[in-house]
Length: 576
Ligand code: G3I
Ligand code: 9MR
Image 1 (cartoon, protein in one colour):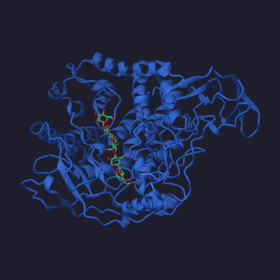
Image 2 (cartoon, helix red, strand yellow):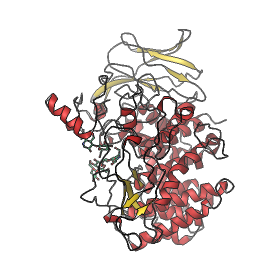
Image 3 (cartoon, rainbow, N blue to C red):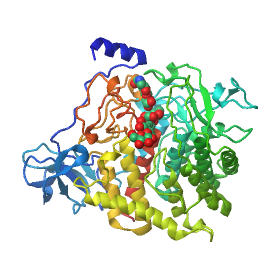
Image 4 (cartoon, rainbow, N blue to C red):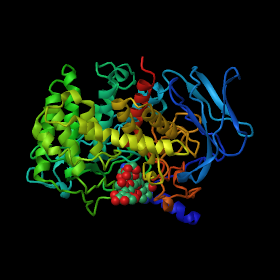
């Protein structure tokens, strides 16, 4: 592509090339989790084949060797098409700050061993949602250098032709404020909100003490709710406005007609629309509202009536889906933003049924889940069946006699064992396989970890915890790119995410706490990028350039398992 064509393309999409060149993959570097470890964790680093046969872990402050070991024989990890030697330093449990050294190689990035190793990471990953809030100014006292004016009030949203109904014809004005921007774009999508809010609320349901003790410094801090719940409410309040009160159906998304350019939220001004009701959006909404009604039942004083309202909304949505069981989202010709379209809806039905069952203990919902047919996989926005099983397993004390407890346990442990086996067989000590390098692969790794954590909570099989740790290690720097994939975390992290505020705010550092999508074998954005991908290997198909929406965008559904897994590993690894 000529420079002229690149410039024309950038102008056309309103994007600007980033000011500094992309960081090349750290070929030949030692790879380690740059956020570090809690003392009792399994601790692994990956070392390229060059250099000596032994490794040492050195205390950064004293320069003393704290641990010495021998590297495993080199083996090739297929997704990266590269050989590595693994270093296991799990026996080192002394808190401190360290680097790994191998003769003939540069020292590893620094990492800590500390009982609260993931406290800052977890808070940053949650704070990222605050930074992505629609309809509110971010004040300097909460947002520091990333303070910005409010954008997208969404109080004057039009009902798109595809969403028109008798009570709300095309062009009806509705108010649908708040919510989080989905990702690097400024649109709001119910399907992706579903799994995102679920995962955050599940983190709270599973590890309440951890989140009750956490201070986030957001506008609601001090109001008597844990920060995670305050943040989740910003999106739940928006989601409630996306239900048509006349029939219970839920709009698929609230969006501009096309993607905004690389400008700040307040610099946009396009007309926003609610687009088409869909069965997937309505069921995801039902599932999350049923779950949230359980969680917020304990906070009646802070939000009177909210829990009951959520449960009523969930039931109403469920009824709409029963009457409209196969309304698959189809992008109208004049709308060009994200699709989140999915034609396989059995998993959405099972998930909504399971959440309604747990919140009502009504066996009719359990029957509607069809447990014998419902499967368990690794969750993703289009594959939510696992969420049903995770909720049933966590709330085993709420199950009625009609529920098959053994089946619940089998579904979770079956999938977790499969992942633990993959981890054990992997020369790189991660469960990720070549086929996992899809759009948002970093979240695949973390959702695998989330499943492994469920397996560990049921069985206490240590290898499941270790395999989950490995996935967190992977996204935090023990990957062939040598990068912590979370902005602002670790010595080397993405500087140019495809995130409109990070691109347009004039601050050199990107908005912190966001995990980027990660290597994507499809390289679907290559045509839109002025720099080439450095490799065709799936695990290396990544560019730290703001052009790369397919490998370097951020998204709310990708941060959620980071919040979950980092809390889980801190709480479960060294229980007090
Ligand atoms: O469903 C097919 C499957 O049948 C096939 O085997 C597989 C082979 O690659 O592809 C599957 O479709 C993929 C689809 O996701 C469902 O997983 C597409 O290839 C893939 O391109 C698509 O990627 C999605 C992307 O949007 C493009 O639509 C990502 O999962 C999704 O995270 C991403 O989400 C975007 C929003 O649209 C807009 N906001 C930003 C956000 C993050 O980039
Ligand atoms: O910027 C858009 C990003 O937020 C989306 O996730 C992505 C996928 O649909 O699309 C991006 O927009 C690109 C568009 O799809 C193709 N032309 C270039 C656009 C911006 O780089």
